[in-house]
Length: 405
Image (cartoon, rainbow, N blue to C red):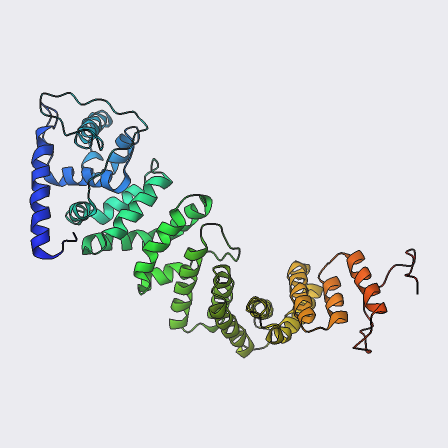
């Protein structure tokens, strides 16, 4: 049953009030009682991270009330709070103990069972003072793990219908997007990339997030576990740069986005993005960004080839190869891009049945010279539908035997 509105909130508030009463009963005797704000923040830390008993004391230092005082007093206070939380969140099959009971110690690797169900956790988080600052403190804590971060993103997103929770999540992804993306790239085997993408998609209209996305370092490789996130961030960057009317920066962002769209199978959208990028570079003053123009044409030809439109891919592939060849002659750093462009050109020519030119492009791409020579030999004995063969076809060296007639 899904409960929303005043009636549902009232029921949840009564449940939380009852829980607070039970929690207070098991606070260690003789210790200074916790105030309600600190108690909620401590429970929120458990709810956000589901830590193990070994991790809990360290994470509790994100609670503001535990940051002051002498180190010794803070350590004792933290230990008491950790023991209290281990008591009130004993596990799925352990009831909350009575005052006379002694809770069984939990293994250090056993995660605490956070507050639930989700509606209750949502209500508690929404009522936690300084939730945004607490979330940032948890993210920045040196003892926080990737598992904690995935859990925190998930629970904040599922509770984001509450404005305080939504605001805390927005603050996290906007102010820490760089470190979040970097951590996701370093942990491709986790769910962090997907969890972060799900959180970011809630705020695609947020200008500050779009600006932060546009400022991220550009990577063209399709990163494992981050492909959907890279598309979302690329779309945010394009939106931001389009609004700022920066044509060359927008052209680069569209070029990057086209490659990311292909990586997730959105080939039609990739073609549109690549075509706009090429048009923007073409409209710029000549040679203002020659490398960018060549890259945009390369991307357009690749996207069209992926889309099965080899006929349309041929012209941009030819132009990209020609531009990169000139750039590589002036600067050897463009040699690899020139090879990639000639490989695309070879594919487009092959699809157009222009076999002699395809072999020449393959050779120019750095393809195996023996393979190129063998292909030339094969073509030389086949019926030639194109008598005007290019003069620069790959030839066998003099010390190799020529094929028999």
